Image (cartoon, rainbow over all chains, first blue to last red; front, top):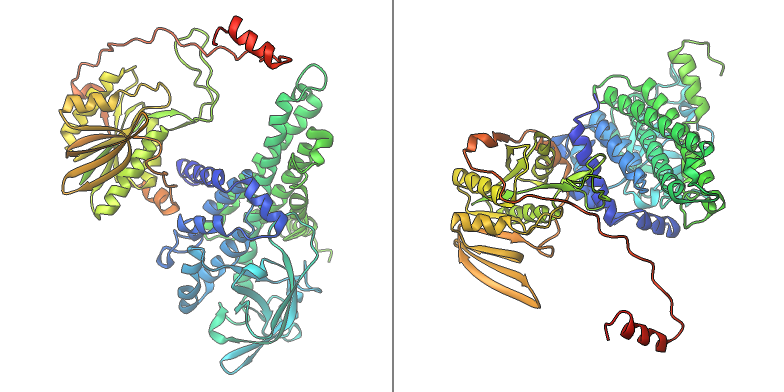
Length: 385
Length: 249
């Protein structure tokens, strides 16, 4: 179920070779300058890794969350988290491949697979965060077009993407039986007339920025609809489950990156007679953090396996995201502690991981909402909200 | 054109090597094994030759335990077409290795054998030369540039103080130097295809060769630890010490 073990090792080896060239220093420099990561992205595309979620007939290697999780986990283990693997490779390619019409697939999937096109994903609104079905951005049908009005927030990577995969209402919430109905996914060009964006003041140490998007009568051809009109929740769930699995892999990898630095330091750093790694006060928390990372990794790969089998991966994707985020935070936290005061310097480069690791507890879905999901849908407990 | 690339499994160059207490070998626990980096360059060059010519076959061969197929699989993921694993778990010296390869060459009849100039573990730098001798083929060692046209091969060799260009007919043996090329990554489609490619296993006993070692490793020793340096207070003192103590001037 974990894919071919040798294949996994070959993918990891590829990542290590690639990050020997574009490693942590490259990523840190771009994180400081808010620059793009085009060089590594294009190399990934050239070597076929951006086709990891794209069917073979569209230039990919077949949809595999298992391989995407391996890729993301190892990139992050090497200190090079690439957010577009979440928002384009997972969240755009998979819904388009699974639910898009032939024209959309032909138009976008080969370009996603070779790295020439990037997508951002727009669901969150000022009044619709955890409650996605509350979205108010509306796409009104007018002849062969949809005309879109509304606002989105916290949209990562808008400035680098050519397209937005937009989640909008095509029927108002008060006119549908179930709240999840009446929602549709549409591909919108980032340079479409009427679409404007403003960067948000998010304080995450990463190259990608977040934007508020304003849709003012943006016209989109009907052919840009992904899946059935009003039944976008299926494509949306595929996108969100794929996102959770990829984010879990990201959190685990970031935890590994930080912990590995702490372990190396604890082997050589002597404050009294012995290396500080000999003290169980530090050794045990590091051993526990490592164990939790491995457990989270296991759950992530199981979720990917279920997803790849075409089954409902919701429960496992949620649990993986919970476990990954918590294990990531635990590992980065002990890594900072092991380094003492120098853990807060840029040179040691673990405090720099903290905002992103901590972010992943809250987004893309808050820890509390995951626990609500497990309580309600897995345990069958009554809903409180 | 058929290109045969012999490869060897070696410890990752980034590994810290420890000698076993009895001096008979190195500690192999927790060692990450990789393709000898010079052999990786040879695989890359074979793939480039095949791509330039527009057709051909790149065949990998290694001599070792069954687990060595991992390194063969890596080479197949880079793009080689198939592989041969001569299964052997006894120590072989360089001449024995060259004899096994000569037998594989006799069976496979490649137009060109291209391999690393040496393995980074024992640094022998002998197998390519011995193989060419056993086959009676031309050889070009330390290649930094390879060109092939109409079964004539031109190789630029890295020699002391410069470059030497040699030309010879095929079949031949070429050994690769560091600056020949930069090996490619295994692409994702390459990794996926590698799973289905053939690795043929041949037990070394079936080759009917005399492989009794002529060379015996008597002992391995780690290099002595570097001593700390010493600070001197003046140029005069330095010159004095270089003259009287180090006796180098």
